[in-house]
Length: 283
Image (cartoon, rainbow, N blue to C red; front, side, top):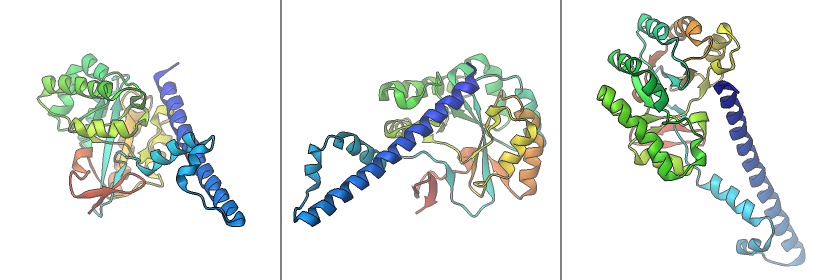
């Protein structure tokens, strides 16, 4: 199975889990309403604690707590400035690295490259080059595990092992982390902040990993319903058509008036709160 296919399957699994949680929350609402109605009809009063006697309460309580205390990474930023961030996940091939650098130089664009430990070890000169050119190194974990399935201690090791590698190569302390497969939980968000990082997702997926072709990447990004000031775009180094699509994609985005910046130049680092969609909003 290819890495991209594994990525797609893991994304589907993650989305499926979220759908299940929504169903649990809906079921809880229906169940609670039914009990209240029954109590009203028969003059009985229910305390929420009495629901513990119901067979499905354990599952429902879990679903409610996950939604009630849900912690989010940054998906986008609320801003009136015409700025967007361009990011590349780097976990597989690097054959298109030189071409990417040339195109980014041509458009005077700086981007963020979220790199795995394997990518850093296999391509130390590329890591040095992108930093020398003013691009931002980002952390994508050591082994590209599903971070929501490992312990807090393992999460920290996955983050800090890559951090040390990039620090030794470039002298740079990375500040942004993107979880593999976009998979996260509250424990990961806490761990990321504890490692002095900001957890980053995206709100515009180029879908370049699906290998639909050059024009599809351009159209998907430039016509995306979420594309707006403060958006974060997801692309991949090593995807089949991304390097070929990049020039026209950047031309169109710049013609639309967008300034394209690294993630850390877009996000807020203080004085903000998050909405339910992971958008940073200034306090």
